[in-house]
Length: 86
Image: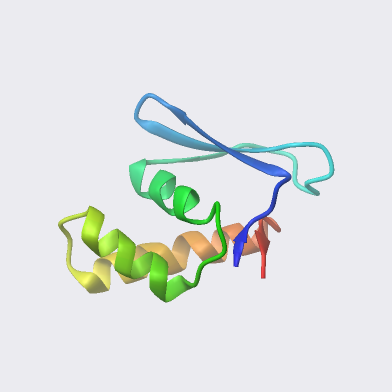
């Protein structure tokens, strides 16, 4: 899976934003924290949920079950707005 080209990730200070471009099929703005920003960065190239969880474990000092829960939640939300190519 990877982020569709119609969605543009952007960092603004401590916030991570996901901006839909023309043809995205979603109108709105997704705002999140650095965790979302890291997930979006990893989704710029084809990857798996497990690979994202592993990479996040190396980036953040948090229990694996917390990272797994956060990644699954973010990916589910991205699926709901049609931001992922799977």
